Image (cartoon, rainbow, N blue to C red):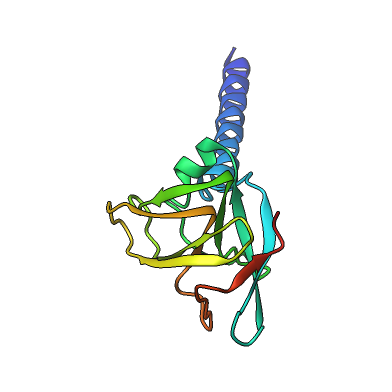
Length: 163
């Protein structure tokens, strides 16, 4: 009888350890990065003044749910291999007024409105956690981490690499 009781305790401990490991895996894959599962694209911004090109790796927000979530709760970090995601590109089917705010967004962002031809029309330097709504006309909006060094983007520059 005593031997059976030890087996039950042993297998119960193994089950608890396996369940704990599963929770840790789920957290590290999905919750540690709230944007896990989104598509990633490389886009290029070409300077209108000197034709210099800068490539950014960004998440794509295509669906309404992805766009509503945006970069809320996201902290920009690089993985072990040094791969860094620089921001998010919000994709709309048509050019229209696009409004953005920073509620629950812990990182400072550069919000960039882009017309249907890929030309940058407006840039706004957004403050973390702000509830102020900023609206401009565009087909795409690019949110970039403002802490990226050496980035010089201006109205009139052109975005390419995403159609």
